[in-house]
Image (tube, rainbow, N blue to C red; front, side):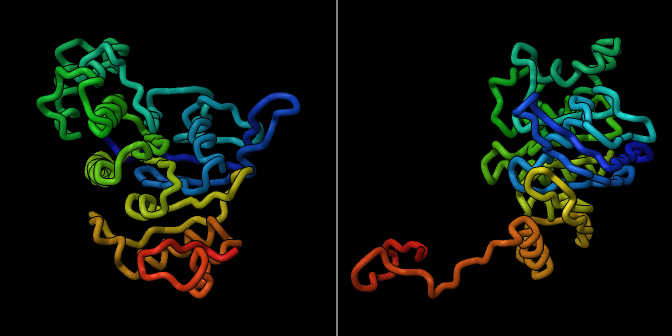
Length: 282
């Protein structure tokens, strides 16, 4: 899969949702360029329009104003060259893993033997060799997401759109899936736009972080992530990582001041022993 394609151009994009009195602006005046093969995270609070922007890139939502194009071609609807991975998998429960992964090539008329060879290679790539004949309901959540990623990648997308794909997983599985995604991406180098509200996830994965404001979502700042690849989980304890995380927190919560320790007060009566209940003073 070539990284020569997948250039994204978003210019003064605005998106409204709803009808009549319920209509509201969810994305406002967003301009963004993404280079072929770049891994970009959209970071922002819940409801800021990250997923809406992703939906517009996928071709599922029509912008109210502005424009967006992939490789110079305006986005006018869904297309196999733009793969989309959601937080919850969309696998067909009545099809086995190998048939779920091979579904896209089947719809394109690829012969059965050829599509199954490619499906098996991707299943192995995402660490599921030996599970080809299982059904989705027989897999864990992390395994289902691995199948989902393989099913999208078999279509060789120029642009991979990921909407908090690991948000429903437990912390350990999420960490493993992040490592898997980076390993696969470093091999195929397709362009990735990854939605998250988790700062550490963005700093671990991205080449660049686009920080968005609360609704209507606007670009607050773009941060180049300076860490060399491959990245290890131990990176989260390094001073530069901690400083960037603090900076992102300030961008997301500009009016928030963390409480000083001397504002901690006991629930009542004399000062309790360590381990008793405490609360923030109001």
